[in-house]
Image (spheres, rainbow, N blue to C red):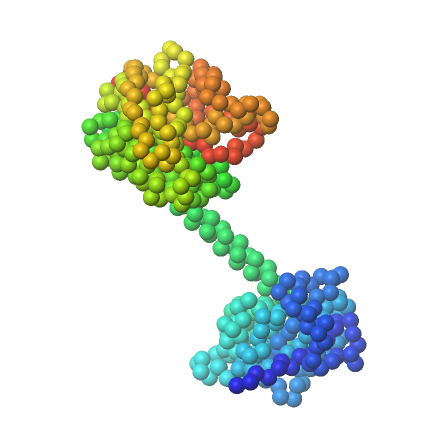
Length: 443
């Protein structure tokens, strides 16, 4: 069925009663309306077109909205008017360029079908126009009904007997701005909910160390490089297998976006499963590389990894390095130093048939072992433009803190804080640091 053209009038808030024109707008007017329909903001100095759809059960046209708006304030806002005599016609005329709908609550039609609901016309319009501002028009004797109209979704209500041009013009502009503000608030609320859900998800993806039965103490500090995130491309884990061996791992996927964070979680979970399955050293890392190759989005993505397996007596450990910085060990009464790293292999994902030798290291009776990602050592040593802190600078810094009696989480927090301070600002890379400690008195 052909659709009739909307009955539309142009009314300027600054024009006189004789200046209102009937429906056909010029090409210039139509272009202006299209340009501002979705983005126009009504202010005291900027002229903006608004389109009002009036839905009224008044064949005689006694409401005379155009004439009322002729006397509106001089804000420079031009209001275009379309009139629908019933809800069916309103649905046809309700296009995207309509900013506000004025609904006569006395409209017949859906009321009977809805169990004599006096707000049925309004509810129908609200379903049809969820993104449009809506005004409810009622008789002054129906004050409670008008108030209920606002509670169910209208931006405001107007009484027919009190209606004048200034009130109507102001109500239209207010309704449009309130609807826009409500939409912004809804989006902000949705954004906050998504952020909370993401935070809960990311917290759930961080590891829970499994060290029951071990005399080792564990501490970790994690700081993602990307803004407002809890998880980055760095990953770590610590577990104790049934034979009493404590296995620790720390790794770094190149990059620090959400894709790298997801891959890091996959690698961590794979490491835990393979470790409990009895794999260690080269066999474990070779399998980890296969996981990486199947899960990464491109062949350019790689990951560094450091694994340590500490014997049940706590005095010795096996060390494997896959392109990762060597751990730091501090023994009682001796300065901290890096564990040997000459026998390390390449990062995972770089060479298809690489090998990762496992080196045996002596820990001693009492010790602290610090494992970290390169975010801890790649910051500046004295602000922007200065050399990198590097491993030597990190070792010196840790020795100062250990000499000051810091241990565990306090040590890690102080170390990351000083690295940020030396860098002259926030670190751009992910940082993960974990510490394992054995006290002679406990062992």
